[in-house]
Length: 50
Image (cartoon, rainbow, N blue to C red; front, side, top):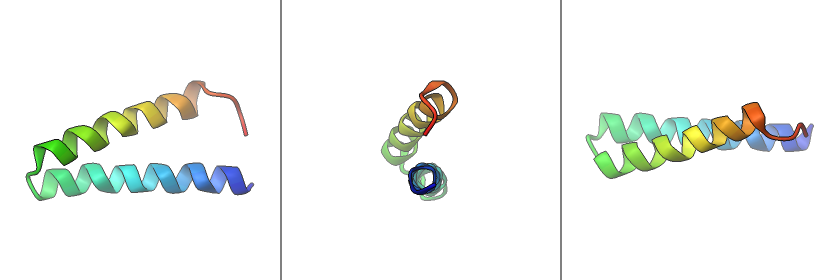
């Protein structure tokens, strides 16, 4: 249960990073957080179950 909470927290932080980059018009933040979010999402969907 604790590992699943950590994964959700990381996803939420990355999602907020994407939103902040979009809102503040910071392309580096938007793109960086978007790439990390896509990698996290791929791991969540295809990775081993906790």
